[in-house]
Image (cartoon, rainbow, N blue to C red):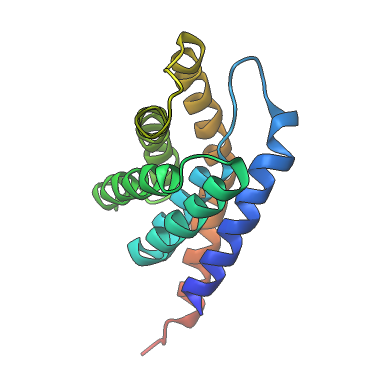
Length: 166
């Protein structure tokens, strides 16, 4: 059930990325809600749920955005894997893990998406696209700083209430 919810919410995030996000653009910075919430889901729910999120959300992004099929899914899978590794190293500071993992995963995702889209199509990499990587990563990190600690605290509280006292 956990994986089905992850897949459904990934599709909702992909729909939001193409409908609402263009209005949230600040300068060259564009948020990536599929990535941000995928990283948060991975930190709170585990790698398997995160990879489900990345695959389904990436395919939804490719289909909705008319990108080469598999480019977003591949980029998200790698970025979510990196975020899972970072989150594993930050076990002691679980509340800050989504923020730090998103900062790293956003750059990885944006660069891989640019490279894979360029490799699978005839479009060249432009300077404007490369210049938008860092501002978008900062935007994604700010979103993760808002929603990540909240999600980690809710999941920790939920797990705490399920724990049996002996």
